[in-house]
Length: 343
Image (cartoon, rainbow, N blue to C red; front, top):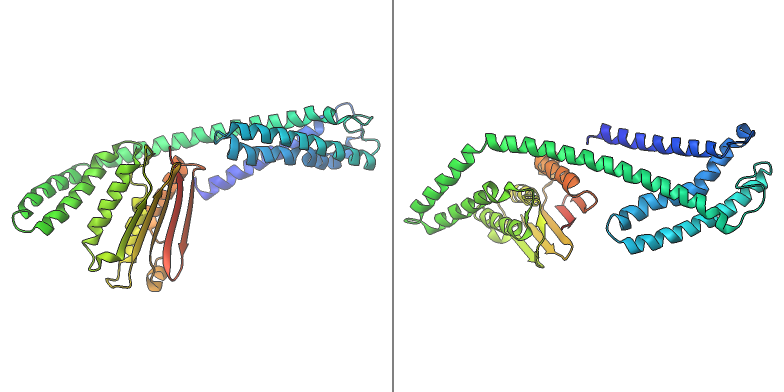
């Protein structure tokens, strides 16, 4: 979503929460006649006594525990939060009634600790339900947007299908000719042919085996080494095992592509590109860095351009709350660090 839609979404969410607490406060004045005097202080009391614990649940416990399948930890944390919430309610109510004796908040007589459990539980449960509904709507909107983009990509792919296939077949012909005269040229043609085969045939699905994606990245880097006079300037380190993980195809390539394009733009020993991939049990850590040049980046501060913008958008749509992306751009290097959870 663009900045306007994002700001509008945040504004609407804040507005809905403010209206909820205003109405919730008004509900406490049913049967009372002192609303004009006590409404504002009671509003702040309710937000402190009920709102803060409820938001700890919706903004912290649910995303970090419940949504990640850590049900036991979430249940225990929610119970502790509810008990603390009730304790806050006890002391907040007593303090409020000492300031406003006519308020009779939570009853005219001091109530037991357990009497405060139900309203605390009801408040947390109500806001939890509201978060589930909001997240469900947001997830549905993201799926619709993803389907729209997929359809658009498929149409664009069909438009350009003829030329890549022609190029792929032509490369096979050139490879056969080059083998008779120059094996180094034949090897370069074969590397490029394998890259095209991966893009044309293997990347047709939504996901691909992580092992194949890493293999393709390795082939791309090997082909890029043929274009530079200093092959040792491009370093690739792969650790860990891919297991059965899958990943969106061509997700990592734009980072490497831009690093090679900008990091090796000056054919000298001082230029370099390093790519480190660490495959883990729950995903991977990806680090890509290249030498930086002041003149180059001053003239083009948006390093990576459309390619990196597209991959950032794909990460938002395909891996919400499952990735961390950091980009550091200074006079020494351009660094991309991506931590990604994979299934």
